[in-house]
Length: 265
Image (cartoon, rainbow, N blue to C red):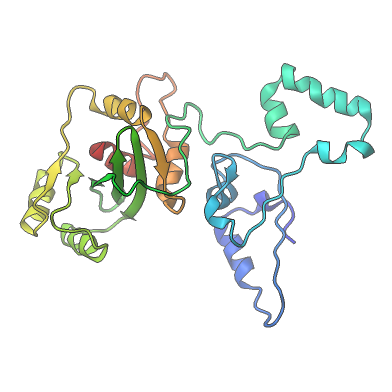
């Protein structure tokens, strides 16, 4: 039993604790109790998407959400009335503290409303978005399947320290054909040419017109988006990619997978 699990400082602490249960021949169950916190918290990132259980865990996890309504017969009616008044007086307090909903991951979030039930249309066109990185920023490759106004997304690469030669090897290991359409960051023409000479002849730089970042965001927001539930870094960016405080531009962070996606779109 792990009570107040959101007080564990990191996912690594949970993993070490989980790995310490090794008894053979015993049915192992771990009960994790907590009050939902911010969607930035590792508990949310590990098991939830947009405050709802991540479907990839349903096979061997059970999620139980309770509120005061499950125990009304034992509570003071005046206290219940006091709580319920906050639904109108302070909706945020009602949602988070009374009904146990997750706090939104970031103020001014850019993307919302994605689906995470992976069932791509077999007739969808497949292409790939590639954002280059190296030391501090990861190289990100996103598979994009598109048909009409629907897109299906899957994270394939999200890793620092990759040279162009490493990227070429990984593309091959992923089974991506040399004829695949790959749209990369046009700010790195040397990298693009290196990969083209390695055989990725349909790899090309993204066209960047005026205000290309905002236009790419608007195009993506106009689509119905489904993301593979195991695309962990893309989902993190979906939760955290935000407008600046003045709302005039997107913050230049939590956007490596998003940039790759935007190039493809």
